[in-house]
Length: 472
Image 1 (cartoon, rainbow, N blue to C red):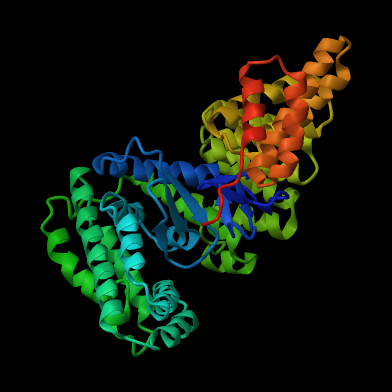
Image 2: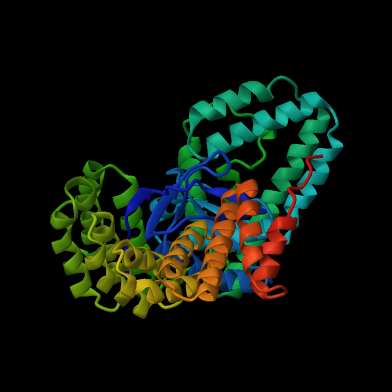
């Protein structure tokens, strides 16, 4: 029921511009940079998270806010929001959560922070703490709370050392404010879960995971934490959750299977192969285990060794697009671009609204260097970029396609138009990678070759006019 893709590093560095993640492609791709370390893109996992979040967003009145859930390449259990449009979830949260309901509870809690206006309110509270010593202590507390909640005792102890430099009333008041926000977000989460007729049991179970992580941290003063200690939160929530008429409601079997497949996929790509085979022994012939085996086998022994397992997955779920996607990706990454095209075409046919798969198909088409595929590649890239509007990889691929079209063109006007399109696509790619100077160079070339006043000419002009915000 689900499909996984391969683990590889993006050649182009990931940049975050105006809160937008850009420049990644693939069934499972990990990219790092100074701006955003270890964000993962995976069509299957993202689709699952969208399905988890959609009813919660609607119940919270956030359905029109276009919130993106980004996956962080971190095996710890954690999630956070940075504004009203971007939520971040560690891969470890998905891997440790045994049920969809546990992840849904985490999403509901983070929505509680957004609807409560906690981010803006906290910034206001911090602004009132004018003392430099308090601000330094807050940084230490952030390290402590983050490390403790994520199960990193060393980080927690280091943060606590910084925090213990002073415990005046102003800092205690600020942290009490943060603890109140956490409790408020918990209560809001229960409201959202009840509104969607889902159980809050998963959220309690998630807090129990956090409690297990915190048991190794000794001597933490609860008044020096931005989050309430997990046992406190469990006690406060238990009455609310158990009184819900939906407390004993379980996840649908088909959703549980999708969840198990994504967990297996992430394990296959993020864990060492020997860990994968230990977690999913060969005696386990379930679909998730086969999925994990296929990925770990590919990473360890190559595409030929993994292909029988992939075919087994497809035979079991012939209408699941992500199994074809992973077959195509494995073949493409193994230098068999032409062989990758049929399974990727099948994946696109089964999941026409998944832009990451379309971009991968275009990569395979262009990788053959057969010009008969140029128009098909451009068509898929245009459709993909209509949804994945900040994909530097997508823009770079379509730039290559337009440049090759220009080489084939006989009429001077057609050649000039294709070269202008290639320059504009290159400008977009550089822009979303954060290379503004190079983006403007390409935009200038594009603007010179495009009809004045057309949408593409205006876009090139916008890039030329763009200036980075001044640091205050």
